[in-house]
Image 1 (cartoon, rainbow, N blue to C red):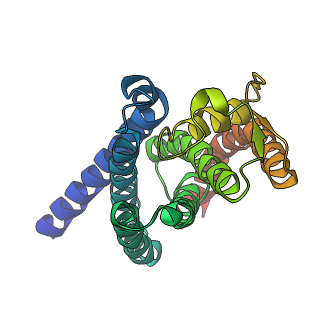
Image 2: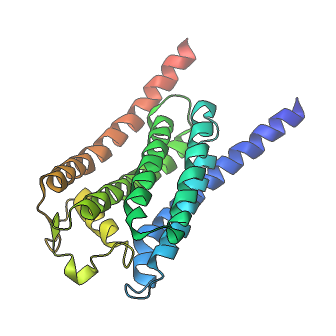
Length: 232
């Protein structure tokens, strides 16, 4: 019994450390890498693939307590990482496949983390870390969706010339546009003109407004749930 309890404690510490690592890598992806990597250096895609691999691995470990989701998420993460790195040896047309695979994996990760944030049984600390990670994941998910639209339609956005039109040359242009939309800042330097791009932008801006209120309402409801559980 003591050994099993010690193993559970180590597993919980590993999950919390992985969630912290996930948050750290997300911060690097959104705030540090776009500044540290010059847009014309050619290293942007390599750094992006490294960060994406770290996001998927740390994210899968962070939700390993949900076994029904952990195994398929891990399998998808392995496939996506393989597709991302194999893209360096495939024709340039594989860029869309890389983006679609990433979008699918990030959606799965976000769904599992949302179950941890809004579901029952999780500690408040796990909910808080998960809520922050989920918010940043939403921005990266929409960035992947914007990239897919841009790859399929070169005229879907205006104002990309100054940022580098090729996602392989400067992948973080989509991160910048996504978080500007998610936070409803909207500087206006990049504008969606295609109908799909506009619909995605509207949906992301709406979620960016509703998400903080939903998370706050969930955290406020926790004491009532705990009291009800004690009474039962």
